[in-house]
Image (cartoon, rainbow, N blue to C red):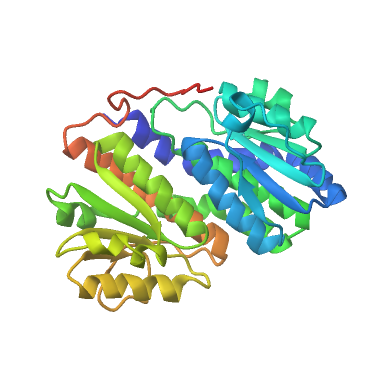
Length: 340
């Protein structure tokens, strides 16, 4: 019998198609509001997997719209009651449940501070949507497993859809509508070789650059959530500034490399770690020493990076079960975490 997590991974292609069909009008309206505002900067408000989605959207906005993006700590509003001047900016708040008190408080503060605010949520109506100027239903559908999968992916797709409408990027629009078929392929990819090689490893690194860094961060969190395994995410460049000291023979390193401008440097670093004796795996055909993990090339650098998370999700769900854990109900975690 499949776990809820496995079922929800399999549902991702359908969930993305549902989002694109049902929220297109809302995305267009919110995108038009951003275009009319022409913000000088954008801020994001999120925690956990939603914050990793926000990091992906950050890179996408900076690369595509040319606006700097910063993450706001929700405690600025909920604990410190800081008054931020955001009249020249915009804000994206991401919350699956739509009701975490600190996320809602920060979204309300951003709206009061003058920003054009957009909520990406799996729950409408909800406090987060009420706190923002625009609410986008990500249409992931019910997610029963504690570890978020389809809501993470749909949050990013919603953010990319918003971006495409904001800057009127027809190439990105087309790439998004092609995602369900690419995801159908990606969800079937087999990363069992990685599972076989990890053995009794107790710690590993997940690397990425640009949007793929957000994927590495999400992957590291999923290792912790589902398998009680220590995993840390680093920029493929940043890992050389200290963390590389821990990389000994057969230390596991997974590098998430998309078909973008960072692929060459990411694979070069992966190969250098393999030369040190690391157990290095990479999602690229450019590697020479590191081992190749299967991936789906989408033809667009942003959707290409997002596709990398699907085979990982399938891998980590199976890995968790093999280690005797229940990926649907990790110890000491709950589905909705409400923090102040």
